[in-house]
Structures are given as structure tokens and as C-alpha cells.
Image 1 (tube, one colour):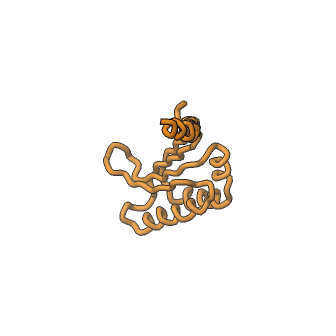
Image 2 (cartoon, rainbow, N blue to C red; image 1 turned 90 degrees about the vertical axis):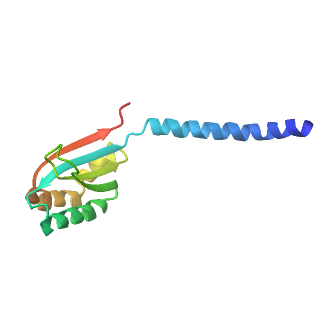
Image 3 (cartoon, rainbow, N blue to C red; image 1 turned 180 degrees about the vertical axis):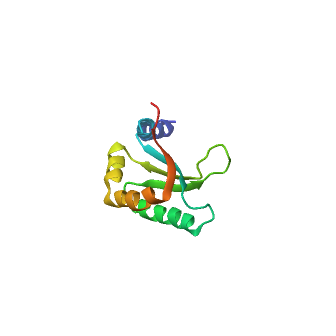
Length: 131
């Protein structure tokens, strides 16, 4: 019986530390300030034009090379509920990372040389967790 009590007393502080660590992690997640940058758009090219695939592939290559960009994804429209055909989705750790991305010379160059010349219309949405 003494051994059992001794074991409980030895492991109780470890359990308490583990519980505290889990609680801290949950609190950090609940104050998450990630920015989700969603851009839906149409291209001037036809959907089956090789220039369309080239724009999407090179856009992904260029933008994912920017260090602040996380979880970059390219989507295409799956229904007729909207008039936009494509989407670039990416995440940023915080507003500072998002601003750094926007000011990055490679992003600025992509917008000027590719986006402004090949995109016919778009809508941009920047989201953060509702607190």
C-alpha cells in the first residue's frame, strides 16, 4: 500500500505538468491569428488553353517560393454557383507575414507581369479567426 501511495505521489506532478501543457496549447490555438488569403479569379485564356495551366502552375511555383506563404493551394470551381473559375488559397502566420508577402519583390513582379495581364476579374478575401 505504501508503494502505491508513493507511486501516485511521484507521478502526480508529471500528470499535472502534462495537463498544464495541454491547456497552454489549447489557449495558443484559440488565440491563433493566422490570416487566410483567398483569391478567386478568372483568366483571359480559355479553360482548356495551355496558357491557363501554365499560369496556375507558375503562379504556384512563384508564390510558394515566398517564405511567408504557408499551405498554398490551387482550386478550380466545381459547380456553377459562382462565376469565378479558379482560386489561390494561402495562409500567413500573422498580419506582419501577410504584409511582408504583399511587399515581396517576387509577389509584386508576379502581380505586375502576370496577374494584371492574364486575369480578367477577381475577388480577394482576407480572413482571420473570429474571436
